[in-house]
Picture 1 (cartoon, rainbow, N blue to C red):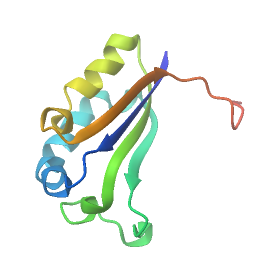
Picture 2: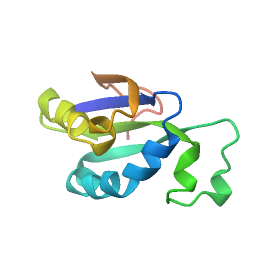
Picture 3: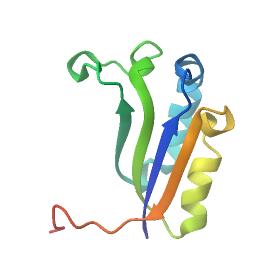
Picture 4: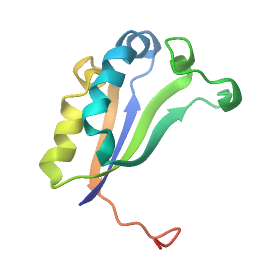
Length: 107
């Protein structure tokens, strides 16, 4: 089943996000094969050409979106629940819903 997990940071969480970056990156490794695509929600001033995945670069990230292929809703919810960012109180909102790709049409 394909799920979208969309999460928006609470305002002022750049320091916490930076502190948890290494733990978050390590956590993701276990379910990386389940991620179809994903990435960060970023500030308007974000410069993707100079982005580096480190404690400085991550400060312009204000949330993320993952599209995951998992066995069930419980697995999608666990991916969110057990994330160090979630445990660290980074997010102000989260959406976890089944996802049906319409555009572009799958091949």
